[in-house]
Amino acid sequence: MKRVLLVLAVLAAGLGAGLGVTPAAQAAGGTVVLKFYDTAGNGTELSATQVKTVMHGSGGSDSDALVDPVTLEDVKGYPLYKSGSPARWRFDIPRQAVAFAVNWPTSRGFSTVVVDNGGAGFTAGRTLVFNQQAAEDAKRRLDAALAARPDYVRSAAFTAALADAVTNLNAADAATTDADRGKYGQRALSAVNTANDLLLSEYGPAYARAHDTQPWIGLTVDDIASHPNWAALARTHTQPYGWVRIVFDPIADHGNVEHYRGAVQAARAAGLHVIGQPIDSTFANRYTRAEYLARVKAYVDAYPGIEAWEVANEVNGCWVDSRTDAKGDCVDELVDPDDRIRNKIADAAAYVRSKGAKVVVTLYWQLGTDEARWSTFTWARANLPASTRRDIDVVTLSTYVEDAPMGLAFDQVMRALQAEFPDQKVAVGELDYWSDDTTKAFWAFDESDPLAGRRAVAAHYYAASLGYPRSVGGAFWWYFIQELPGDAGLQKAIRSVVDRLTLT
Image 1 (tube, rainbow, N blue to C red):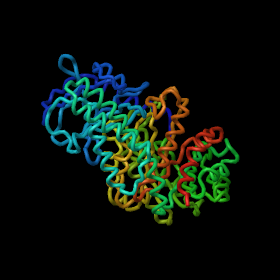
Image 2 (cartoon, one colour):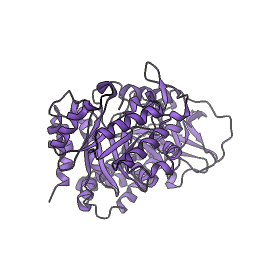
Image 3 (cartoon, rainbow, N blue to C red):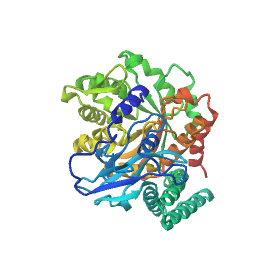
Image 4 (cartoon, rainbow, N blue to C red):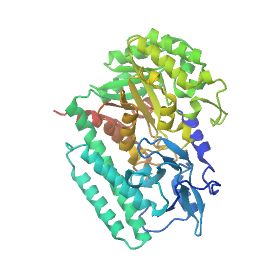
């Protein structure tokens, strides 16, 4: 994961995109007017400017999008415009049913919040209280998640959060003013978020253990020199399900495939499984199609014992198929269409398949934080044809919640990923939370203590990713070597998931 490329690409994409120009075209299905209320649940309607401030967190950009309510494909990016007196944000409905998605906070941090009008999407104009509708739609999805997990043993904490959600939704339904609907709606949204997180994190390890899924508990090794005992550390916190993803850095190896021989041997000696990543997304646009395949071939041939190869990383990030300027912004597309990442994936996947190893492709989770064509499911549908998918074994998501939140949408996203790739296994393929990064746009779990937030991110995503058919879990904490050795809390967060898997 590339801090500068990711953050600046995200910031550049949305700034000014939805800041208030009324579209010239008439809405095909009417206009939805949104009334937003404060995130503390006090029932204060926010001005249009205040709404944007909330959405942008601590420096993010616009994230509003119209999406397919089932597939989460991005139909239209940055649809919001303001109009009326007082000025309120609204969007026009195109010639299909759409849901509205945006980054919005609850007491658990920022999430991609999807408002889908009871699951059917919006097809006709109306005025609605965003907070209440968001809570109602999230509660409906929570009920569906519970129904899909009849073996879930409800904890006291989950039961309390669910009861809180129901109480506040009932209060919102009974309210006689929009202020009260907004107040109780936001409180309900926070309670649903809490219940949802507890359900997923409590159920994941129990599901994996009951179904003997042989999960991958993964860590990423991106700097083999900085911690000489990294393999032993990885073993301590992941076994008996330990995997390491070794990033073969072209700057470090200078094209010498033997540079990582010791690292692979160390992983093997520690009893760890290995995913090899020949080309991280930072470097993908530096290679022609032929050069890309040549590097993949060189590493696959040099390390025939590696079980899986990540043939492409964060493939729908704009920087992968674009040139970037000195600041890391995506400034234009690659000139030669033959060099697009979709072709590189097809070539590399076919080659790895021919060698008998597993083929892994990693998508980057984003929805509304860049142009619609780069959003996760829109890009996948357009760029990974059946001929390529036949050579892919595992599709994973890279998620950095401080730049592109998932949060409350986790179950929705994982189910959409499984539906999009019914013949592949799925996983979280890259994860971190930069608690000391001043460019962090969106907070998770603990706004006042970023280090506690980091630990909570690890505990939740490692556990939640395990609770699905065809999921191998994964996570593959990116800054494992830099962050894990000195953080007992982070070590405990990951190891506790493994311990729950090994309960007898």
